[in-house]
Amino acid sequence: MEQDTFRHKGMRRQLVEAIERNGIKNKDVLQAINKIPRHLFMDSSFLEFAYEDKPFPIGAGQTISQPYTVAFQTELLEIEKGDKVLEVGTGSGYQACVLIEMGAKVYTIERQRSLFMKTKELLARLNYHPKKMIYGDGYKGLPTYAPFDKVIVTAGAPYVPDALLDQLKTGGMLVIPVGVDTQVMKRIIKMGKGDFKEEEHGLFQFVPLLGDKANGLK
Ligand code: SAM
Image 1 (cartoon, helix red, strand yellow):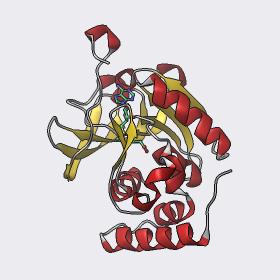
Image 2 (cartoon, protein in one colour; image 1 turned 135 degrees about the vertical axis):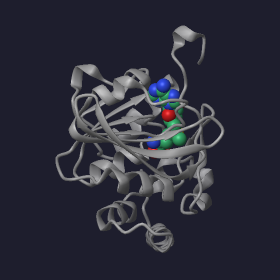
Image 3 (cartoon, helix red, strand yellow; image 1 turned 30 degrees about the horizontal axis):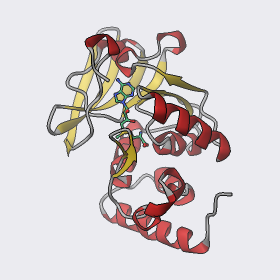
Image 4 (tube, helix red, strand yellow; image 1 turned 180 degrees about the vertical axis):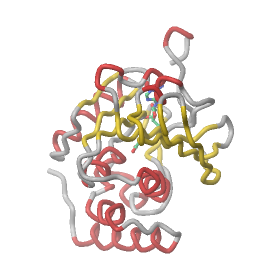
């Protein structure tokens, strides 16, 4: 049975205060981070790291993103209740839960089968219910369920995939870290068909967005 003790809650409050000091203002984002037991998304032996503002390995060569980065990307998305959001890179499922806590309808894709299976089971156990969890290639988005109000990519993309821009509603936005060694956090707003406004929001470091199986990449 998962435990969320007073000690966990206390550590989480300190984490939220640290993130706020670092410039995150959106109260709904801070409230979601305050509520979600991040330690349950990591192996129990790593509890002491769960409430540090750092990324952490979750297996299969992947990481649970740094809480500040989760907060930063979520703030950029300007989530409103009922938004239909596509997440590329489910990973531990933590970011998806932040979005769900904020009232978004979440569609999330993961490229690594072992993580996909583990996270699907975890979220069900924690009673978080994305609209869809898909094992697949996020470069292609999810055309069957498009269009989306918002799209978030949680791995470093070498370029902006056209499919993700196509699958945005007009007025919708894509938040995506773009680059190979380090990434520029881009927010791309769809003004109309083929008409986009692009902003840059600083440098970050993510694990890379993996290529398609067809390219021989795993
Ligand atoms: N959002 C995650 C979380 O809250 O834990 C962080 C994820 S981690 C930084 C990036 C994730 O993207 C990894 O789980 C990785 O397997 C996944 N990924 C990489 N390439 C992908 C692709 N082409 N399609 C979907 N997921 C991909």
